[in-house]
Length: 271
Image (cartoon, rainbow, N blue to C red; front, side, top):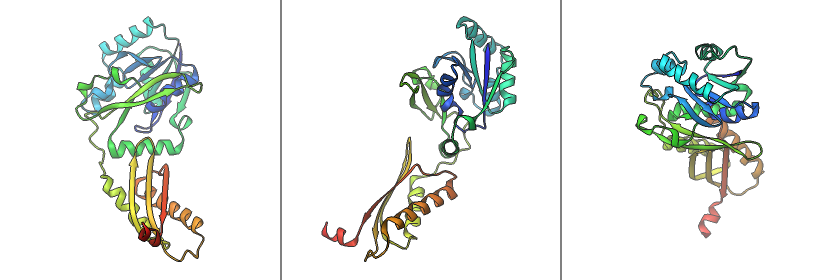
C-alpha cells in the first residue's frame, strides 16, 4: 500500500483541502480524525470531533481504541485500498496512525503549506479562532447530527480540475471547541468605519458592511470631500490599503475583497 502524510497545525485547513489533494495524488482513501474515507465517502471509523474533550479526541484520531482500529482495518481490506493519505497535526501523529493501522511506512510527507497558500491558512485560522468551526471531508448526510448540539451545516462540493465531483464537506462545531472568541459583526463594522473616517478624502462614512462567507468582504459607502482636486482613484486605493492593514493588524487575516462606493454631498442632496 502507498502511504502519504499531510500534516499541519490544527485549524489550518487540512481537512478542507484533503479531498482535492488526495485526488491530485491519485490516492483513493483518506484517514482524517478517526474516519476512513474512500472516494469521498465515509466507510468506517468514528470521528474524533464526536468526543467531548481534546484528550479523548486525540486518542480517537490515532486509533488507540482496539475496536475502532479493527473496524477501520477490516474496511481497508474489504475495499482493497491500495493508496491512502493520513492527515494529522504533525508527522509524529501520522506515523503513529500508520503504525496503529499497520499500514507500513509512509513514503511521502507533505505539509499544509504544500497544498494551501498562506492567505488560505490565515483564513482557516481566522474562522477557527472566531467561530470554532471544523470541517469534515464527508457529505452532510453522513454526519450524525445528534453528536453536535451547536452547529452542523453543509460545507461545499469539491470538484476536480475537470469539474468532476469528488466529494463534499460538512461544517461542525464540536463540543470540545470552547476556546474560540465570538466577535460580533458590529465590532468589524466599527473598525471599518473608524479606519475610513481617518482618511483625508473622506467627508463621511455612510455605511460599512462586513460579509463573512466563502469570501470575507468589506463593503464601504463613503462621501468624499469637495472639490475633488486630488487624484481620486489613487486615494481610494490608499484607503483600501489602509483598511486591509488595519484589519490584518487586529484579526491576523486579510480581507478577500474591499468594495468602495463613492458619493459626494451634492449627489446625496439631489437624491
